[in-house]
Length: 291
Image (cartoon, rainbow, N blue to C red; front, side):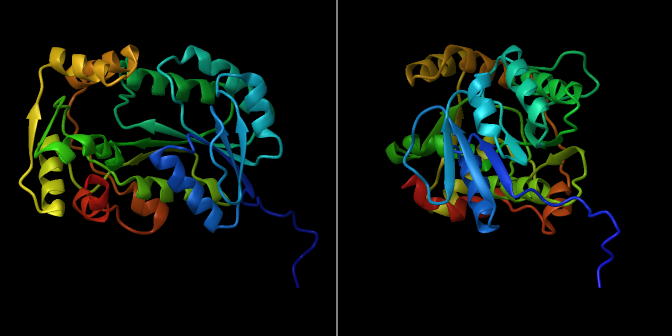
């Protein structure tokens, strides 16, 4: 019989708030939490069609009242910070500190812990939010993810028109399947005793954009090629597509300043019990997205 005098150990969370739930990664996290029977709530900026078994609170992550409402009865939070402004993170972090849930924060492998300032605005804002979470004594689990494979969906419209993908030629990265990142996120969200600290999530190989396009070509059985664009031309095209100017400038800065990394880790396998999948397999699994 169990010893009733022994203190009970920590229980895994039964309710999780997912920010960014409408995005490629957020949807995967929500699906996995639901499969585990977890009560899921999303914080969304605009009302969206309801998803079975998912509560939603409409509000902005920078609005303390909306964050406070979303946190009621919540044990854990999967946090994706969507802005290039880290100053506006102070208010929601204060709400998190007051509610004291388990926090799993999605960050980036581009962070250089030895640098006083990061190479570009995207890496800098992630570093700033990590610091804020630690200073609030939230003891976050930080998942520093490399480039998500799902970013390649941004090439779909070009591939429906022809066999050339044009864009910024960023440094080679260990592209990681968003499904693996979601598995890792859920593993730490629901763990009895998560390993607090930093986990670096990468795919199994470092790829250039040209190599990613080649893998897509193999999956689609087409001869595709990547065409690198000068920064000025890439900027004008992204602005014409309706991307916000601060984001465009941050992407340009990242393409120019971010150093190439050949780092590949086994952290996904440590967290999930299986190796990270390849971009080539991701392309096969998602070929229909490009037709």
